[in-house]
Every structure is written in C-alpha cells, then in structure tokens.
Image 1 (tube, rainbow, N blue to C red):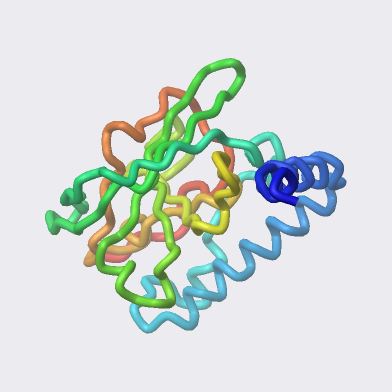
Image 2: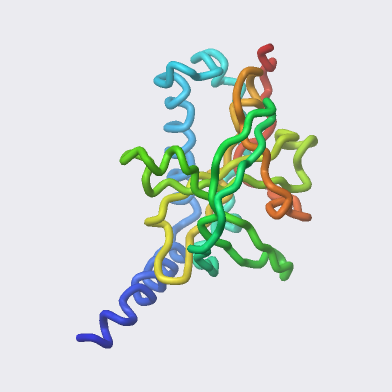
Length: 209
C-alpha cells in the first residue's frame, strides 16, 4: 500500500498525459472554445470590466493548437523565495512571491518560466490556490499585445513534480483594451525568445483612453 501511495501522483499524471494525447483534435478545439466563451462572458459580469458586450466581438485568438498544451512540464517549487514588488504599466507596484519554476522544451529549445503568487489574493479564500504566469514572447507588438500576456494557473495543476501549461488559454491584460488599469509587467526572466502562436491575439477594437 505504501508503495502505491508513493507513486500515485506519477501514475495519475501519466494517466492524464495518455488521455490528453489520445483526445481527438475536435474535442480539444471544443474545450478551448468553451474556455474562450467563458472568458468573454466574464467581461460582462465584472463591474470593473474594460469591455462591453459589443466590444467582445473584437476579441481575437489563434486557432486552438494542442502542440501548445503541455501536460508534463517539470516543476520546481521555490518555498524560500523572498517577496518582491512587481511593477505595473501604470507605475503602481504589486506584492508577489515566486511560487515555483517550470522547465520545458519547444522545438528542442529549453525554456524556463517563473510562476508567481499574488500576496494580496492569497488572503482571499476564493483565490488562495491561484497562481500567475505573466510572459512575453516574440509575437508581442506584432500579432499579440506588446505588453505581454498572462496565464492563470491553480495549485491543483501541479501533480508531484509536474505542472500542466496550456498556452491556448493565455490572455491579454486589461491594459490591452483600456487605460486606467494596473497590469503587471512580465519580469525579464519570463521573456521568451520564441514566438508563441497560441492564445489571445491583438484586440481588433479601439483601445479606450
């Protein structure tokens, strides 16, 4: 029994990986489509939203691509990391702490991304397990928002020493749609020297000032 419990996280992760790999492309596209519909709906229920229902028609996304979904990313926890202030595009600062580091490869190129925890949100039971991955890549300023994009994660996405990352779910900060928001600037350690053709593209509407 002890042996089974020891390897249970890995067995569960391998099972998830197998299911993910066998999932038909149509099912994956449906899943991402559902996620994007919920993303659009959130703009209509948040009182601080920068977008109206009409504005959501101008949201644009890359075609869902399972090549940008990684079910087995090596994850290293950083429990002794010191809190720091992450700068925002408005000049404000927000308190974060590094939660861990994700390491993976794209086309044979090793990549590292740092994952953070918002020290204000962690006090709220609703967001206690929320993790934050802001990043930049070489599509910024061309196909995607120049200020980078974000990926929301949960601690439940971590199984043992692995984490799941799906860049099809990365999104623009609200600063891409309107002035007046405190959007964290992706730290330099999360600037990727590759093009991430997944997730949200440039907003096709007019930015509000």
